[in-house]
Image 1: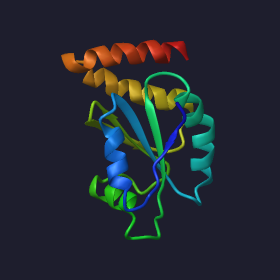
Image 2: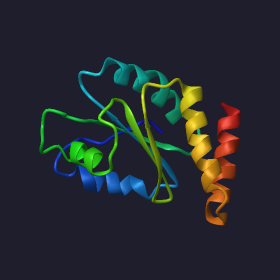
Image 3: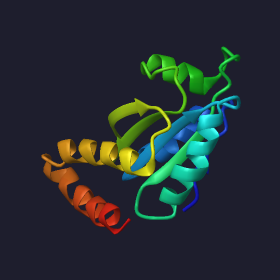
Image 4: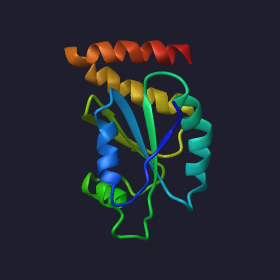
Length: 138
């Protein structure tokens, strides 16, 4: 599945909510002027999106627009104003956030660490098992 672009407009929150309930989703926030965001999207998110059960989304945030729903979300959830920034959800539950244009293996280790923490709960254990099969195949 390709990286899903979520447009930062008046429908942004509703569009994001639609994906939050996915089994495992990584929301990525970038900016038009952020070169490392574009490189990260092309060389990390795009290749990973073609493998496994993770839904990858990408939103270009207009940091100059105070009406930006994505920017308001980032601020209300205390997400770093650094790009790219990531928020991981699993089964509709917030799992964690991070930032920086990390290589694929570093991003997967971070996701793995959050899943391992979550896997102590029985409802997440099966998801974690499926995810490990995917990441081990990479």
